[in-house]
Length: 387
Image (tube, rainbow, N blue to C red; front, side, top):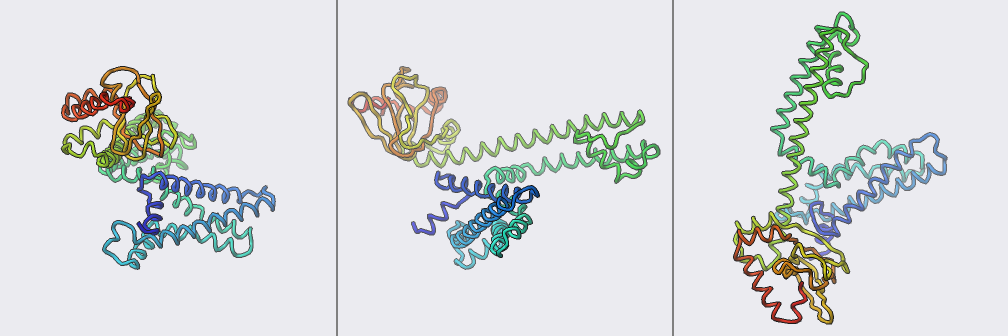
């Protein structure tokens, strides 16, 4: 793998590798530092020295954004969709993408900070603080998740939005009929009545415009109830959309991990789908204890990558990616018989005891293979250390 490809994977916002996730976290922290310092720099009570320091650090943040922009421009040809395009075309495509434009605009404060005036740099950076917020949005995975949820649920959200507008304009129109004579400054026209309708429908209730007639107050109460219902419907759609999207993402991620385990290579697609829905992934740093001797065994582990050491007394054994451990306690329903610690950073798939017995009924061939391996380990004194 080339250096450019490695850097692309490091900066890839969709990568699940730990190094890439740490890089995204660092980008978010730097972005937040820049936004906070720009905000602090607008305080009138700030001393000149503190303002100069804030402006200097703001310039450093903008310079880092500049370096990041050049780096992303350089690695753009490594994007999967750029396989058939030339390097120049790939870079032009990225530069004119939304992310590329935002990254370019985010570095403009560096030019102001380099103009020689710290105060000018801070003021210029404050003009682009919204761009830094947009840049932050491109780095936070949750924002992309929100975008996917909105796209997936756009039909339902459009229906809710239509319902909201129907109630909103109906309330504003009726309020105008009922309150225009007594309060022309608030309800003299339908457009002015819309402010009261919005405040009431969203149950905010600023109190600057309030119906005074009996019918107007009854209308207000009805609009409040409608607002609660509409917002509850909106919340339910978004919550369900988030749950479905997270389930899909986790399913795809676990499927990818399962594909790396040779033990599952001979299992059909239908069986894999059943297995994937019951596995959970966990990551451990080097030196972490995954299983401790004597504790109750409630799950078994499939090693996706990394190396673990299994120890029991004087016996020890290394297990590598593709192998599994912890099945003895599930099969025998006895406490763990060994300690298992990670020798390198590891990713494992966890199958708990309830799902293990469910699979025993649904996928007897898979469980038979696990039992056969467990029987083989019982016959070898060293392998009995696999818990």
